Length: 457
Image 1 (cartoon, rainbow, N blue to C red):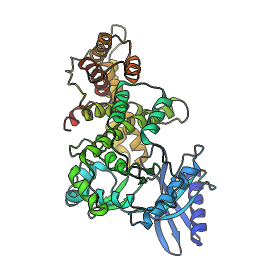
Image 2 (tube, rainbow, N blue to C red; image 1 turned 135 degrees about the vertical axis):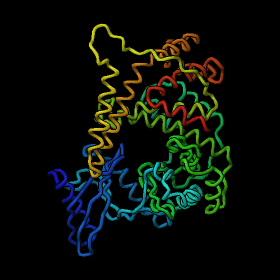
Image 3 (cartoon, helix red, strand yellow; image 1 turned 60 degrees about the vertical axis):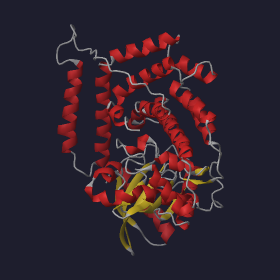
Image 4 (cartoon, rainbow, N blue to C red; image 1 turned 180 degrees about the horizontal axis):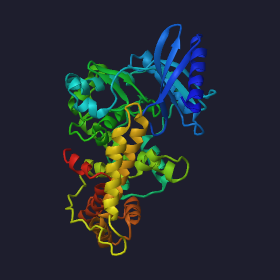
């Protein structure tokens, strides 16, 4: 282990020893993939009770938020008492030597969290049949959790909150302004507050061939309308390219049936749709906020930077959910390859060669235990692909400019401000065409496969 890993291992051993009253030795720690806002580590421990693996979640050192970590620990305790399948909390604290940030330590729960494996692998074929209904049942348990020990959780209006984050980022977009207007105009009656997980989706659930083994990542938990969690689970981003509306594996009907099994209540489809639209807009704004953590200089991160180029996926999904997306033909590419100054290989050829080498000779050669490095390398490859596609996006850029000019706007910011002021109706043909052209131009560069994958509503 490196010096930093040894210090972290010693820190984990110390806090576990204090929590359990036994001497605990940690001889291996490894960082797990994912987690743009918090770090997740697995640690192998030894004590008089034997060997086991625990999981450490901590804020990035130097960027700690103790109150939020304390709230997450409280949610784990309350949810466990209510019968929600969650990892057992062993220790939590605001700081500790070697850990150097707010943290919590839980038992390791066995199960698969990678959405694409759960959606596609034969090993999960049996559980996929009832998984959407299982999700509804687990959400019912969460929403029935007593909240007497959770008074520290945020209970602000979710639309007000997401709008405030959007304004703080100060990056006006027509699709966001359109979504905010629709949410205000169509809002259903608000239900009494319950515990809301806030990020219940594939990736934060551990699943085996029997069902849901663990609900993870409670850092966004709050008090609010319970249907928010159901709508979030239906957001297109969490389908990962599959067509089934609930997490890419099931139907909304099964989800609602499972929820009724536990709560006795079956939400109306229109209510669920409102929260699905809200969830799509929420992910759009949170993605932009995450990117600005890097772009604003607050936290240097390849992962956060890459998220900035994925915002257009949520813009596309939002217009699709609101039935405001126009189909716009893709003109032939205009590529900047015919250079009379530089020798070959041309710029796009260089990018292709570098990507191919990294994918085959570097990524393929990394052993399975280098999971973090493989994850970061895949992000780099995706970014190189975006650069390559942007070089050939001249026709799309012209279409965006032409659409805005026809409306009398110099840029998207001006159009967004006009929608906010109520001077422009986003449902009119010319406006929806201009919005669609801009979103599709970005999406064809960032992730062209998303356009095809999203045709199924």
